[in-house]
Image (cartoon, rainbow, N blue to C red):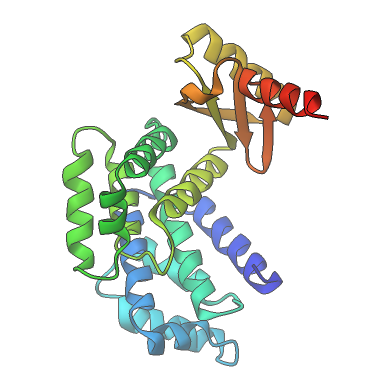
Length: 263
């Protein structure tokens, strides 16, 4: 990510956090705007052109989206296009990120991170599903409907909106990568980090609490815990937080022992 995009994204995110009336309608409209921009290189190029005056870029937003989208969404889009982005693609990514964050803000009591993680595990266990959702073939709206049918009644409206929107606009990204990014964004919006824990058997509630507390102390932030039962772990735990891997599993200790014995 270029420095221009980093600054633009920070300004757009600040605008989102200071806005009022953020609900799932706003999130859905931001996703729709990102799809519209992605589908029209001419439009995305016009609103991301650093040579164009801010007022001109804002006018394009008003002309194109003013009647179709709500005032809050148009205001957020205007703030976004008035920033300097490294590329039009970065602007589309930025608006998509705002949409994910808006869905998180609109549903503070829902376990969006956990639900995204569970759907990611479903995708990982079903290669045909991942292929269908990631394929360039087929209507984008049909992919969104498929996701809705799969998780209806099993996930919140916020999670359903995020997943169904992302699979309609993969832009050469794998579905699980999209879900991982969305989980990270939701956690960041809520002021915490995601820890993925690999264990041989499910953790009890007390064990989850102890592990969450320990990780929170280690990283100095709240932790959202996602658990994967993996029999290859044998015993102990393997924890992944961002780029950090804490491996205290029996399988790893045995592998280290075998390697040391082998000389």
